[in-house]
Length: 226
Image (cartoon, rainbow, N blue to C red; front, side):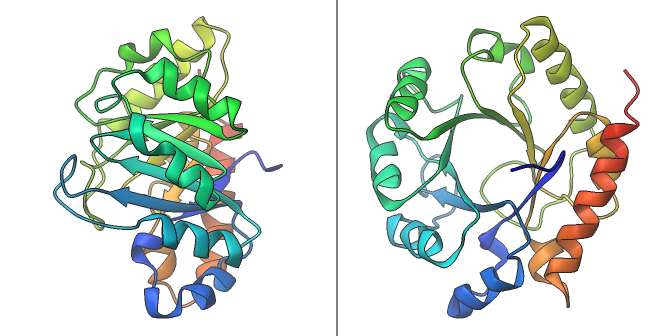
């Protein structure tokens, strides 16, 4: 990952009958985002370890696994073994967040933490120096295609201030309702990893959307007002 901005197409919006073809269409993306849902922590059920393994085999991009599960402490190893390069777990679900972060690092995997839209950014103060990525949800987790929550911009600015205060600089990821219409402002607020599903895979030319998302967010990031 050498760009100022990284784009992570979410396979939640891909055609699973032709997943390899869809991944080829976004071969210019730095990450591939895989949403794992257990039907308990969120009211939906999605990808398990076989899909993670298939994605790992089909792409050179970093495999970014977002675990929306009740028991991440007990299950992260499943996804490490399947080939995940980065695993993000929810602050709201982890029983021992520090323990999970340490375990991921011990196994050579990047560690991320996720906060829901109604979870205060301030809860991250105790882990911000230890994680490689913070995912700020800009919709409520569980379903694709939701409308972007406008308060996310302020939460991103707050997160940047928290990182600066602790001299910590994890990647800052946003997931939910990301599109060409808000990519520039997301970059301006400090986001440097954009997860996009429908905006990418529903497009005629997904690779072009990846480039445009990256370009717009880069313009926002480099011109960001403090």
